[in-house]
Image (cartoon, rainbow over all chains, first blue to last red; front, side):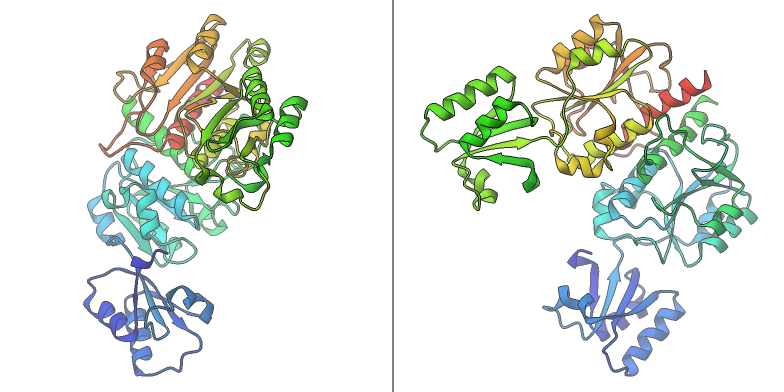
Length: 246
Length: 246
């Protein structure tokens, strides 16, 4: 996290939560803090707005010693997230979204967003846990692409996927053990959500179950696997190829 | 460059040059050094073996203060490079090679090599100047892929391209202003060399001129451009798609 990415101190964090002017990725509260009415207020407001707060050891605050943080830091997002319902409402035909399931490397996330913008993908969905939020490092790695595509942060990927399915979206999950390849799918004339998993764990079992298609990228040499940002580029541009050919 | 990647001191560098046991990327010689018979020997051996040597200011040696480098450092490659003639001799049919023209970011190079191994590309060609050599950082970013594909380091890309052409290879260069897209090319039943350029400069004019095909990746949104490692993934896997379909 770069140092421009946070707000510190109880009052400033309460102000940020109340005003809603800055998008907050998450709030860190020191474990060693005696709770008081302001901390209670912060927890209450965060819960209300669905913002994650974590109680963390003092080592997490070491980088912020020079600030009068009072044991409370809010990580700020450089972008405004888009609401999933608004997104669905405005994307009804031939739309596409990439869902990141547990991708933690900020460089990968930046690279994926940049590629998705070039491929005309309509949005990116990230979960508020188990995934890096959009930080200024992600913004930089994406070459600014984070500002050119709606980014939707959701508390539950599975209820989001269900919501998409209920709204006429088809769900494609990547899975190295699937029979179909990413070239067997027809990406035209439908809304599709493509779920990309973390490099080692892959897409979560529960999301794999909910998906309509599972696809793999065929490997010509049995070596390790592709980096998740390369894998995303290959699949979203296969969709571009098909949609242009039509 | 990681600190395990070098040999220091006049005698050790002469020994490395003479024995040929370690692959040397390049040799740095301090500008402030009074020349002597050993330095002359190093220059002579390096020239003989086509290894680059550079005269550099003392700031380049700051990281190596703790070593008795005597103003001479040889950067070592973690891999053994393959000779272009040997490569051509052993790749005569449906072979493929990716040529990196001025790609300096070590993470991009590592990512590209990893992707190329997965796509069954037969070799990687890098120039000894204007391109990062294979360092241990590249090795790491490639997830070890540098050990699974021949990497050919050449002094002149244009004479290498000419040599490939003379040996029945077709040359494809990426160029954002070309009319054809990477989906218009038939990658089957031929040997092809795909030239990828640096992110901003693109492929050198002289190499573009020598190429048989120029292709672009179609962008669905007019935004900046793709990262070179994403671009490479898209094109080499289009070749995979076509070759599997056949």
